[in-house]
Length: 418
Image 1: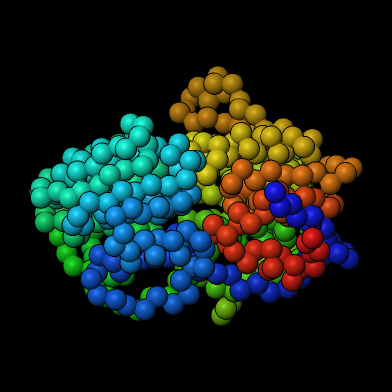
Image 2: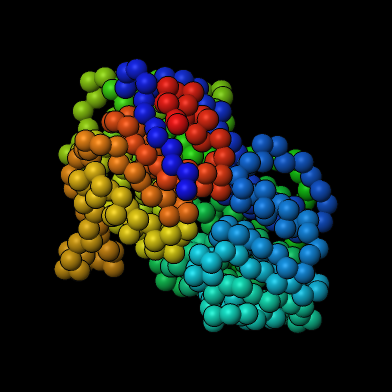
């Protein structure tokens, strides 16, 4: 097993410039649109994430067995895409992927006429898909929106290519709403119009229009540098490739970290992060992560490093990610003397939200070794702790899933990585 030892050289001041790679979320959606478009078009700054490269390869493949590995977005998007393709394919993944539910999406696609069979356990990958002569004859269905926005996005991307379009009814509390908005925004760029009112989305049959596209940098990746800035004694850091009018929900980190002492100034090439040496952290950081779950780990580590009490909600989807991220956070934060615990149900009796409270300030004598659980975000979220003292990160290569150059970029900011 590989373990990296990470330490900040010199002072705890952060200065430098990082050119962030393209957004994985945007890239994966645009790849599906290009495949459905039927006409190739150039995609500039496509994400170099392993998941994106894998999706691109699988969309070009005509192999009867397609292995999505550990890529959840890739698996879900391909489940819908392959349902409309001729022939029969087996779609599989890693052992962890086989533990991640796919039932709500399969049920929805079956309502549309898809032929999908579970090869092993009911409700979970792997899947045997197609062909179906009746796919798309039904044009109205309901799907639970409180598990994963990726199920909704997979259906929306396919909707304009169906014979009668699609009227989609979202049931329950909608998680990761900005990701659905991102999908519709990108579809609009490629000529597809949709109507979204309350919990109903309607898309008529239309053709995607091929257009050159430039992928914005990844705000999820930017969150790790915001965390570094917040934990530093002072910071002046330029992140290139980000837009002020972003379609990514994780751009909300600008507001999050402003409350933690980091100011953002947009310029021609991206955003400049600054933290003054006399910045005073708040006593409490409270946030609902329902619409931005991918930055929850980052904020938990930042609050722990600053000694800021955290009151978090909207963490429901973290249980079914690459790992159970709530359990992983609890275990790894405990190594630094910080606790993360669910509050009793009576705390949220006036709402349907489940709350977690985080307490303590991260400290250690000997470098702690943080496990990553085959989860790229665990590795990158905990790396900023190295500003407080040397740390160790197990299986660091997991970052290739979304940000292959993370460790190289971190080294340019004065971190020794052995």
